[in-house]
Image (tube, rainbow, N blue to C red):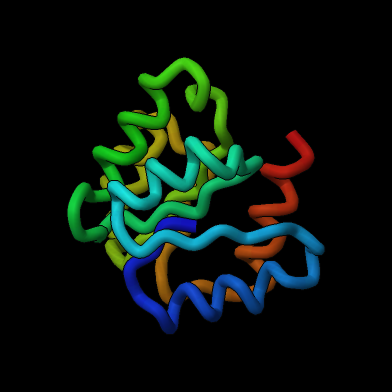
Length: 116
């Protein structure tokens, strides 16, 4: 998970705990990219409004780097405008959700991505 808000990170961890998955956490774009390289995640929950590198740039780098280009990415943002979902899809995101989110919906989205 790449999310700069400690409270949102904690909520995401609580939501996903029942899936019995290991969760790595990064609070900014550069740390998130480094964690992806070392942790080899199955799914990345990616905030857009990140310090260092924003989520759009992180997504672009994930998709352009051959070892991570097939990684499942769920974009999670507070920006609910329709164009944000379109931009996420064009950038290669596998799923898109807005904050605030329903915990069950987040869990279902991650489960779906894990099963692909």
